[in-house]
Length: 295
Image (cartoon, rainbow, N blue to C red; front, side):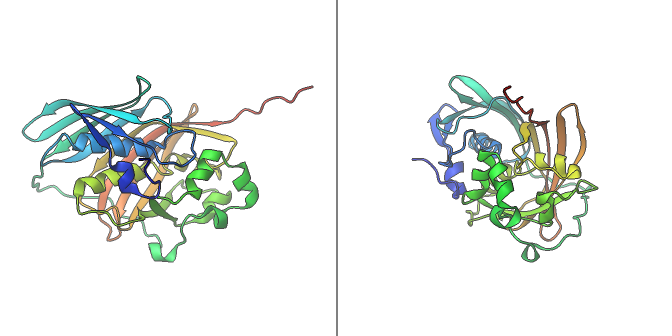
């Protein structure tokens, strides 16, 4: 049965085929390619199902080929290491016999340490003081019509996460001089009390808009049809416990763009200021070439 896009649990509920092989389905969204965060989240679920009594602390992944949402994704898990403190898994996502995604995830036993520090959460308006990201209200009809179809459908669907940017003017041409973007997010529905599931849910959400931060300084967004953007790799580190169905602040910036590549990074905080995760991603960012008109 095809999962509902608005139901995050149905997307992450991959099917075991035995021998550390799993099958994941894409939601019926009308997209032409699979959302990268979906593959990250499902791959982490696959890895977690081969590990007992340990939670993931990091993952590093590459997007190899665009995924086809009309056919299942097969996740093959390889058990690389089961050590005293760390467990390592490699996950390959396959379609039509070819790898579309590759990830290594590391799991760690809980331990105490005398060293404990974290970055400070930015001073931004709380989620109840900012509006959700709604295309109909945020941008004009002209920009909506010029937006790439898969992105428009993405934001017009019933989202599995609610997102509330602290500055909506960013999406209508305002240049962000320091390149910093802040978005409150949380799962649209309550999730079960399973820490690993909340980590997989955040892995899904961590791909939302991260590459878009590379365009903030220019007053541009990946929503524009004239921009061609694609994630190439993704890294995520989990630091402290959290719930993905409670408000989290995703603060993003881009320290470098060059040679058609944009690098973005993010910190994710609980509403009380606790740093729970860090993210990094590089992607291809290009201005689409206009075809010369026929003479």
